[in-house]
Image (cartoon, rainbow, N blue to C red; front, side, top):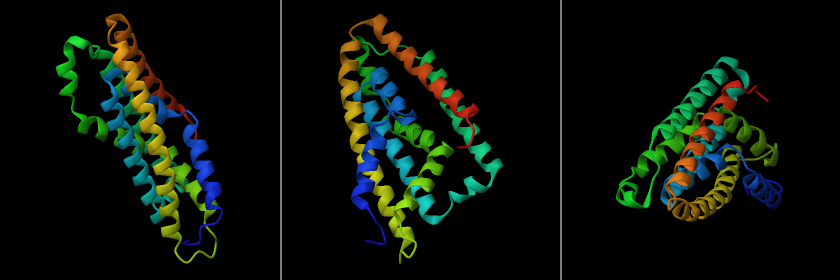
Length: 210
């Protein structure tokens, strides 16, 4: 199919990689625990959409710029780090979501949360490098349609990742309903989520290209 080899192995690899905790996992868990399952779902779909952007970029060869231009990598990395830190500060400054403010939770701007998930993922250059490094390993050198092969592999990875992320969002969101019954615990979880985003941003800012 489009010159893809060992497709079943790629599916297994994708599932295992998606099960491995990473920044996207922490982002979704933080949103779900602090703001409920619908926020987690919006974040998960945003992350998946960001991965779709990276997949299309890899298929078109645009991600190769990040591998050859240190300045481009640095700029995108710092933008992504700054955005994560900004989100972390926002969560640290926001009040916890309590049962008495359920209406406020229902009025959350889920499109904004979705958009933040997209931006967070797109502005992480390591995701682009990951796609560019992994996907070509399963495309034959004599593939008649390499772009379609890369796109198919990317969509496969996104599908398995989205299923897993939605499971995380629903599970963490279920816990959040119980957590919000305690105002102290709710505030602690919200603060922890904010600190997590701050940590992810700082980690991305000081990370080296690998």
